Length: 350
Ligand code: UDP
Image (cartoon, rainbow, N blue to C red; front, top):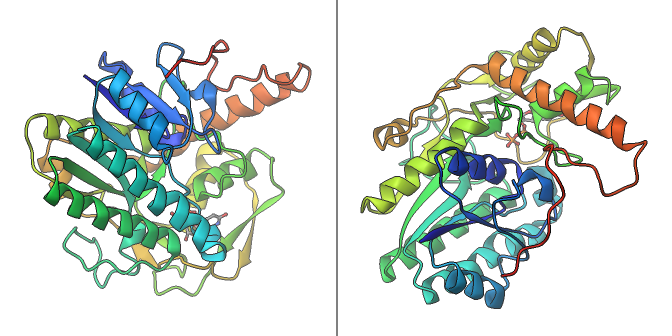
């Protein structure tokens, strides 16, 4: 029996593939490479380029690889973009999850782990927020995830399927061993942007909003290390394999940092100062959101990297590696850039 990882060439999916390999388990990956990077996935992992909404392809994968569990990461994730182009997000995140779920049920897949988001909470009335809080997304992105959650809950109730929904808080960092990090060009996340600025790849960075009802006026978020989040998926899958019932679980550390605190920590870790500019609030941003993840901990998740400077250091090491690979690539023919340091791969046959 095998696990199918959709979006396994992306940031979180890719680290989860590594977590599988680290414990001696080889999953298969389906990724459309719209934002993922082929070289993020080691060559011994069967890799298929395609769409999670492609019923025919996914059915074939389920059948040929005896898939009994799906970890569904593939999604669009940029909150402000979802405000500008909501239908793109409802299609990519909700409509395609519907198609994937339908194919999974038809293929008799029994376990499903779904990448959801703290964005489903909107501005919670109290923080840390637990899973019983009323969801009220502020963005189409958050709503597209919440709609998928509802589809999954109803499908599990009606069919022979059990699921874990993981609501991620702010995911950051990079593989501590330096095998992988956030490689998507044009990424918008705070720590990535701040590091790019520290490394002089951007002249300055914006701080969106200074009048939020928070201690320093900037937004507060709970930053979770991507490798700890990857291990949360293993804990969730093991829980389902051991017969556990369907659950919705937060994944964060329970400690919030403001945008300014994060920027200062990046300056400290990178050892350089850089310019920030105050900009208006960004559409769809809640003021403050911090996780209560007690349920995930009780299910067996053991966070090992709960340390903001460490998280930034790992991400910084990755950014430096990316920069040096790109410098080298400028002198090479296109197509040989390999941000994960792997050889090039032949495509697998579904
Ligand atoms: N942020 C910022 N400047 C940036 C990127 C992000 O001030 O260049 C802020 C953003 O407005 C939010 C916080 O940092 O308050 C975290 O944003 P991010 O995009 O990293 O994650 P999100 O919370 O949207 O999932």
